[in-house]
Image (cartoon, rainbow, N blue to C red; front, side):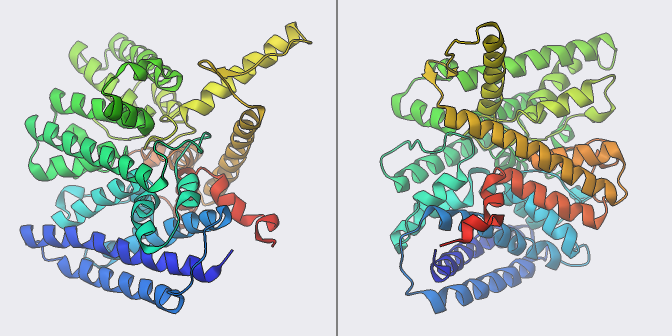
Amino acid sequence: MSLRVILRILGLLLMLFSLTMLPPMLISAWFRDGVWDAFMMAMAITVATGLCFYLPNRRAQKELRVRDGFIIAAMFWTVLALFGSLPLMLFGDEALGLTDAVFESFSGLTTTGATVITGIDFLPESILYYRQQLQWLGGMGIVVLAVAILPTLGVGGMALYRTEIPGPLKDSKLTPRITETAKALWYIYATLTVACMLAYMAAGMSWFDALGHSFSTVAIGGFSTHDASIGYFDSAAIEMICVGFMLISAFSFSLHFIAWREKRLTHYFQDPEARFLMLFLAGLSVVTVLSLWFTDTYDTLRGLRHGVFQVVSVATTAGFGVADFSMWPGALPFLLFMAAFVGGCSGSTGGGMKVIRIILIMKQGMREIMRLIHPNAVIAVKVGKVSVPDSIAQAVWGFFSVYVLLFFLMLVGVMATGVDQVTAWSTVGSALNNLGPALGEASSHYGDVPEVAKWILVVAMLLGRLEIFTVLVLFTPAFWRR
């Protein structure tokens, strides 16, 4: 482990991140909203800090190890989100305070979508764009982007890639070289974004709204340029386009890579994880729509539109809204919220525990039941036709155990700040699953949540984005021993 190499890489990444301030500066000049100087100042501070990290260590050359990858992933997401909050603190009289700006920045980059801002419709256009851009960059993972670029600067990337790609099966590469893998992922990601934007424009969105919402849709983020989210447009066409791209983005990007390379779609229905997600969403949609119809919450057409949209939005952890589902009758709000714990597929931009883990937990539960009936039987856990090694099965249970424990600890912490139980468990669950919407007093925004609770939720967002172990491993004594 080399501190100088890590600082050198962080410096490079910060300087690269500073370039992301240029597009909102151009947007500010285009709309003449008068806040371009906030991005200029933020860019200068970020570049200066990056140079301070890089210049003293520019000659440090050493191959990255797995330990270095954990440190860089955790430190970079933390440092980047802190610097990403600078424009939100500098854009004028309506600028956010430190806690709110950091919360909003973390929420964007981790694609959580929780917001402390009210009156989003009245924000300067460049700030609106910047929030959406944060989610787009965080969606696929800025570390993966850096992996595609940094090898040209003499920095290896496999250690970073393995800590960034979500899910329990992290060692499979789409192409033989990690650089080509990262580039392939970004080509697919950018293509989906452009396609989503064009579809939104064809359905009636302005180019600005279409661009912003394509960023957050493909990233499964949930930020919007309007307080009413997708409901602002009240368009069935826009809602169905959003549903389609949320579903696409919730599938593993390895499936998209196969579709792009082999020009076929049948593998989507053959993949056990994708098939489970589609069946899960279909079943939950039927239950939700029927409940809305039988309780006369909406008429037939609107019940179908709102029911399907909110199921896909919440279950994939996107968090867009066309209605306040927290006010829906009976157990529907709780049912939808719990669906977010499943989340997207492994290797997607979605949050949650990931579909593959849910499948493995269910299959292991069934195996234990079968062992009670046949104590001497050797029963393999299979996903599709592939037997899952016991090491992965044990890792899934370990993840689930730590997940539940951390959820409980953070729930107690948030409640200790004076937040009521419903608001506390829903905000912690929303942050840990990178969902965004919550129930109770945070159903519309997080602005009234106490400051200490916001910092706890920031930690929860980071843990959810880096899948817990990547962060927790840094706090073990064994990690730091030579």
